[in-house]
Image 1 (cartoon, helix red, strand yellow):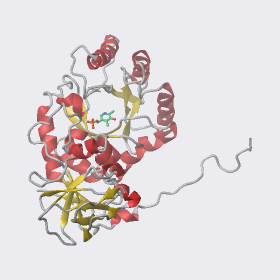
Image 2: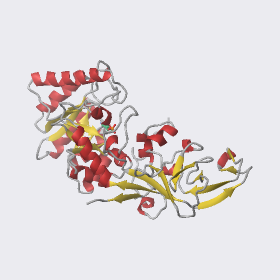
Image 3: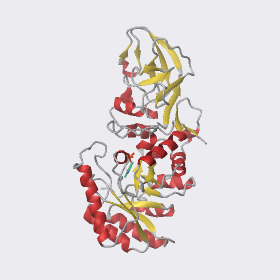
Image 4: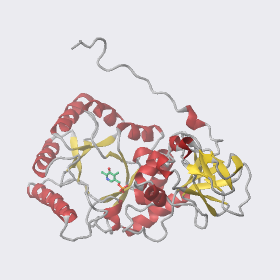
Length: 400
Ligand SMILES: *Cc1c(COP(=O)(O)O)cnc(C)c1O
């Protein structure tokens, strides 16, 4: 083996995303902050009395634009914000957001100082991370105890400590004058599918409740406990907890077809574009790479300037559809990196520059919902939302 030469980790610098700064592109994602604020109020009312709402804004607020969404969430009564990474929390702090921010997942021990510096609460699920936090707080000597949450692995088998270890970690936090046990939490594996009261979800709930009870016997009371995501909150599994960690439902999509959203919840994102070319196809013509789509009768087609590099997934080739002039225009041929061709429905006359509703859309506008798009390409709405690329400008619709 050759010995490594030079530094262990190469120096890096971050490059601003200039592409995202140009907002004049035909393809754009419209973000309706009024709809988002409305959804926050509706979901808050669905939660049991005494249970607050943490707005989960990780992954650029599920592709919707983290800063504007986070601000709107806080103004609409969210008690805190959930993110996945230190970088996501830092971006919110740099934008001037001062609400409590919780990092929901694991961080690298090397990121702990940055998290403390931006007052981001950490979720601890391992001894190693707790030790990194305990040594970091000793070098900064915080003015107030640093809030940390302990994550209990009650069966998801992902991040978190198994119940016995979680109690050990909670005791250590409680005994450390520089730390505050701000929360104890878990995350469900089948909240979106399991409707059996004696099923896995209730076992997970019991496991967390037992941890809380064991600690309470020793006089240790975390400031909060939390377990419900969107699906669990919609199934009223947030009962008794301090807050629910809600992401997807706030963006107007349902975590499962079995869980209808409460009345009044509206989609926040509408993906729109404008036609770049209108053209005739004659029998024998094929469309796009691979020549998979063959034209059998004369038809009119339109070119839409978005493709899989925008997050309009290639799996929608010959399957997806868009709304043009209130009608369904099916995708024909393969979706390319930057372009997609649709067939114009009979009788629809359009020209270059006309609007196309690609996904979402206000009621009455013909366009597939994010759930339909996800279904058509065999995935979930989470992946569609978070896949909308940075080069798609977000047009934020404000409200008074
Ligand atoms: C992403 C996430 C959530 C939010 O889930 P939704 O299904 O979008 O509501 C809640 N808790 C944790 C730990 C998460 O990682």
